[in-house]
Amino acid sequence: MHQQRQHCADWRLHSSSLVDKASIYTSHSYSSSRSEPSYSICRKLHTFTMGDNYPAYERPEFDSVCLTGTTGDKLRKGLQKAVKEYRKYLQKRVQRAQVKWVAKARAYEQATDRPPRNFGAFETNPCMTASPLAGANEAIELDTLSGDASDPPLLYVYLPTNLARSCVEDKTFEAVPTKYCPGVVIAMNCRPYDPVISARSISGKYHRRLCTNVEREDMQYFLAVVATDRFSFQDNGVWIRDTTSGQFDIVAYGEMTWPPPMPPTDWPTASGWDD
Image (cartoon, rainbow, N blue to C red):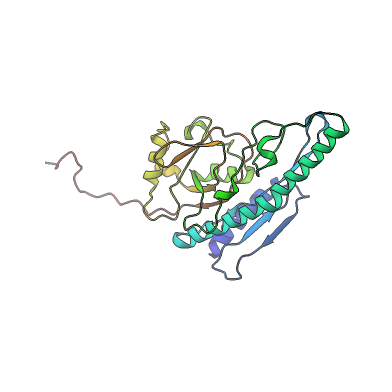
């Protein structure tokens, strides 16, 4: 666990230079036990100025939960707690920010004799969108986010270390190259705490989507995310988000721990015994 905390601290120290110095962070721990991962909500806001003099919208950011070094049932429980924290963040931070913005937008429309604009799901659901006027709001369905479920209601994106870190730090999938499926995000229900998954089974799901250049060795990190209305179910436990663009919350992340590869042997291959 000490290694886990040091790993996360080193990562966050590396990425702190990218964060606005005006950012305010509020952290709390679920447990004083050293065996429990810590959780925090990042209160830094992204501000976007609306066209037509609509008010600026500020979406609070979620500080992804680092679960590197946690495996098995402890990882499952860590993900459960991350879901509960994320749901709380959506309810108390994102929805409140959206309600306040819509109220200001309506006041602006009334003051300027404009007809009320339809902001779609932004008025009813917490959304990923950083700009209410930019088109698709990417709604999140709160009813599906139960932290009490035995298996956390999450999807998982598996990527190499450098790409996973970029996604966490930048809160977007825009850095993911076409090697991992052109223009879309492949997520799956292969849970990182499940003892029966393997790097081969995960890379195989990429291969079945014609991403044949993805190697087992690329499956180094998991990113735990929630399904939005931009995800569609395909088959074989795979969901696809129709774009890599736009802001996206990473609920939790961690480095995968795979068994070491089998050492080479002098046993004959399947082609037959050597003479």
